[in-house]
Image (cartoon, rainbow, N blue to C red; front, side, top):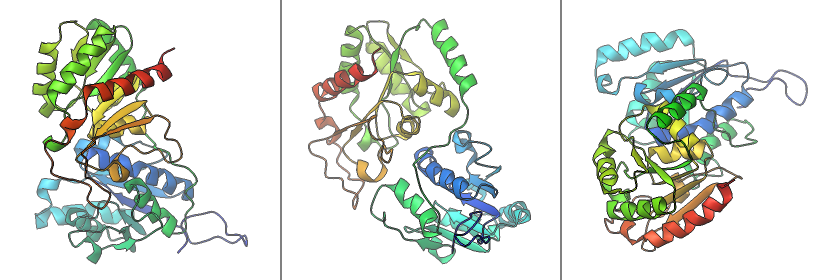
Length: 356
């Protein structure tokens, strides 16, 4: 099979896909990890109609045209309902998909792939929860490498070219302008460091006391900090704000939607967090970032820019046992072994790169 392309070497038209469904419904980091595959698809199939199936809460990080022609929202809570299956089928079939690319590889995405009616259904090699019964897993040279490369292997396996690693993102010009005005009205007019103290799993988090001591050093240096995160991070943000005596720590946890969060990260001078969804936003934006790892392996799901890794700065716990083969280790003390001194020393080096 050869992926879409205008002409073969002999000058004849090769078989192309005209209507493509990409399934990647969640979560934030996983959707962002899939965007370079979207870029590669569009490069190889410039004239195809590309439709993306996603859970609505993550749709706002997807770009519009020319990369995605249409978005289909999938309600996870209703996927067990046969009546919803019929509803989805009626929504999907009019597209006449000739290719379905399941980058989720789970039972819920297998349902969508099955209902799509696509003539050809593929996924990346790690198809779980029976999804391999619906879509064929495509294995490439990067089977055990970063998940972004694993997804890109689907394009390579179909005969496409992957020349560069690019994250197509939505235009956030308006959100950035609104964010700057919001900060100014709150009393922050200069540069700032964006920090996200929370993570999806407690075992991934850097202790709050470490964050507090780091922020004290940061404000002592005359710098400002903006605390970001979702509603689950609001208690952490409140506590860090309460412990600040400088007036230069600004808490916006739970107060931004996804595009506002993207704007807040993009406007920062440096971004710092453990492995969490906003980290992958910073990576996609190629923001100068410091990422803290211990219970998880950055080799599989950490920040990744392909050949360009100059903006990525990792701090890995000295007691970390996580590997690409065992990417999540339940070690509640692991992240605490990353000292404030270690993060601060790296931060000072990174700051030299970005200071005007």
